[in-house]
Length: 216
Image (tube, rainbow, N blue to C red; front, side, top):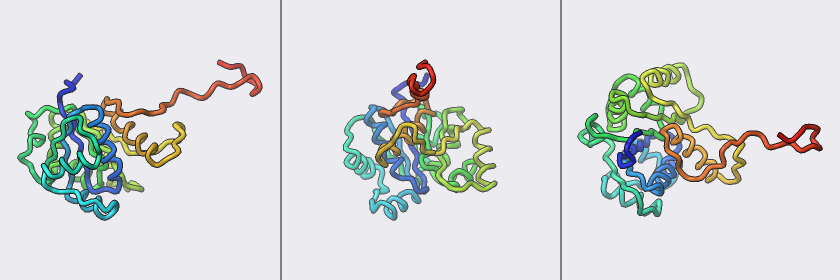
């Protein structure tokens, strides 16, 4: 079991699901977990285009931005510049609990699957694969073509866990926020972390005698 003092690497690529990344960061910090975050250049553009947020690229300014945005002072947060391949998480000697790419664009998926590291996300993912550490990839694309499927298969064969953020309704969500929490929490279940609160599946409800069946 990895030490709880080891950081979780949270990577955000330029796919359209930034609210999932923001909520993931908030839940990790609320759980008092250390986080090392890297946001791709494309993700910064998507945040501005879709949510009107100007996320700073400077690491210290970005960390302050997220502290204010999430309203969370707990946990340890280190932000890295998207192209800083001299960052600690670019080295296999820097220990982590694992890495989650949420969301993962298919461009990011393809480059990691090909062993190409043009930015820090791709290099850190390659490090986690070569070191045999947990790497969880949450691809956000629809539909998947054959190239996408083969790239994801190659990553799964290399040791990554593929966890697309697929919604469910058995927890009876009534708000978008509840659905976001379900998606984020289920992705981090894959890393062995239990974040937030979730109405998990407990099996079908007991049937009454009036339904024509005995109550189990």
